[in-house]
Length: 138
Image 1: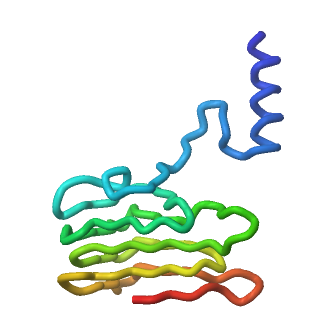
Image 2 (image 1 turned 30 degrees about the horizontal axis):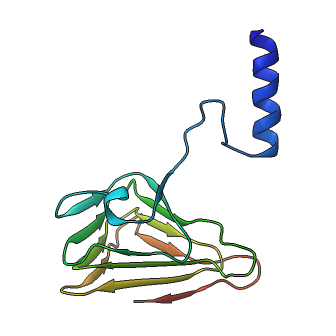
């Protein structure tokens, strides 16, 4: 029984990666409390933002640590990928990443600054793909 379960898991993973079999999935986000809580709101893990959603932290500070990875989910076929985040202020620690191939990404600080940390491994906002990349608005 164990062998057939393992084969089924391998077959499923090859068809739909990380769908089942105990593989960790990144958290999905449609509202700020599904990303993080508190003020400052600290993200230290992988989070997939649902496409086309504005995640509005209002006046709270959003901080992405060196372990943070924000990605945009797969949009419906008739829409381009997009991610919009609004917060009082936004900071990306060195090593933090926002990765969204060919997406439109908008970061808005309503009461403070947007700070992108620079160090040996600087924070990165990567919208590149093999077709030219996406657009960012800060």
